[in-house]
Image (cartoon, rainbow, N blue to C red):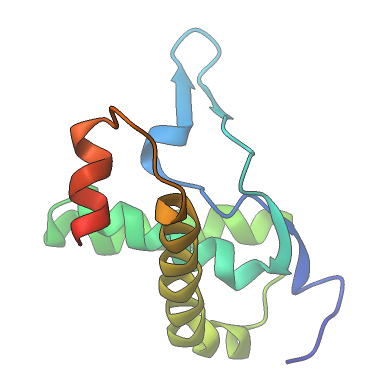
Length: 123
C-alpha cells in the first residue's frame, strides 16, 4: 500500500467514543488516551473509530454520524476515496493486533489474579 503524507502518519488508533470528551462551555471535543498511538494509514484510524461508533449508535443514526465523522476527518487529511477500500484489511489488522495483545497480557500469571483476568485467560 502506498505511503504518502495524505494517507499515512501518526494515528490515535484507539479513537473510540469513550476517548473523546465534549466541553459544553467551549463547544469543542478533546481526545484523550494516546497510549495506542502508532504510525499507520489514516484509514486505520477511521476504521477503528467507525467500528466503535457503530457499537454506540442505533443503525438509523449511525450512517448520518458516519458521514459527519468522515467529513470532519477529511478536513484534516485529504484521504483519497480509493483508500477507503482498505477498511476490511484494517479491520483484520485490528483483530489480529487485539489477539496478540491479549496473548501477551495473559502470558504471565500471578497469585491472586482478578476474576476478569482469569476469565480472559479462559477465552
